[in-house]
Length: 194
Image (cartoon, rainbow, N blue to C red; front, side):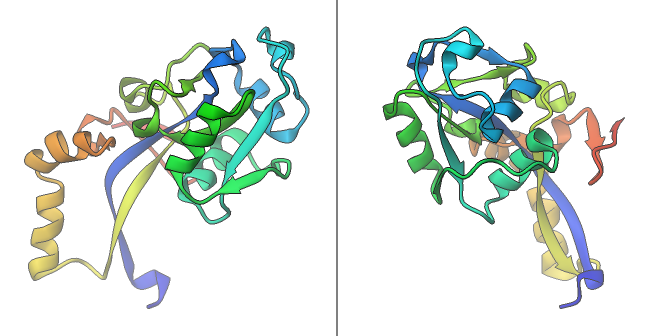
């Protein structure tokens, strides 16, 4: 299939947040500090007002959509330092929750009491903040069709975008419904009101 033949259908939004071991003593960082952590320029939580504990990075595997989103909006083209990589989000959460000084990033739906979600620039990682782009680490979830959808495919996409699915199932799965987005963002990061 040639890429030009594909039609993109945005069906949901996923918010992604940095998570830390709850004992690091830090609940908020600036975007610049977050980038410096993953560049290896900030190496101890004490440098950010937390405990005297070395920072332990845990990355998602290359090819992970979560990693691609984090690198695009946080790293902004800079290469993060080499660190252990995990394929599974559940494993990332488990490692961060049990490793002193650990930090990583996950979809909002994976944040639980075993880890601390970090605020960035004083903005909490919430669905409401994603809908206005106050929280900038997010991406669209897509479905693609070969050409304009027809027949059963068109009906299925209509079903996915229906209020019954967007307001209930999409939320239950931990995503932000497209119907709640107050902004749109293009591939270059340009944000405009919906």
